[in-house]
Length: 180
Image: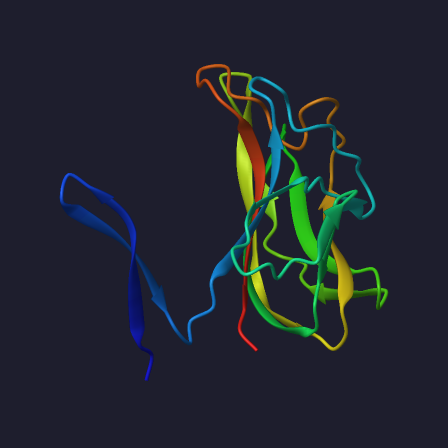
């Protein structure tokens, strides 16, 4: 049975704010592709598996991710549950994603769901592509997210920047949870 523990995180005006942790439930890891406001996600190349940008370790409270460099993240041996969402932009394209273990030279998850996108009033629209599942690696492994695109799109194929919203642009979210 899981047990909750709490400790006072902050006390303000006589009110305690608690940090609650639950033993037995692993915390999640969030790796992302982030760019400065109004910066597009980058071009896509068509016809073969390509490396998708992953440049930020957004959340990893337990320090599971050994490293993140050059779009490759290193994980210790174990079983992981993952939920990945990535934006793609273009006209009438198909996209798929997979996780590729560069240490073992093998696909460990995917390819995921394919998406087809069109245009709305001749405007290019962002499309979400998803990859979900569980994978196991027997040894510490360097992993990268890859995509396959049916059309090449210069500049914003990996996501079109939002001109209406201020702040950082996010084009990929990789949520991981080490389950064993």
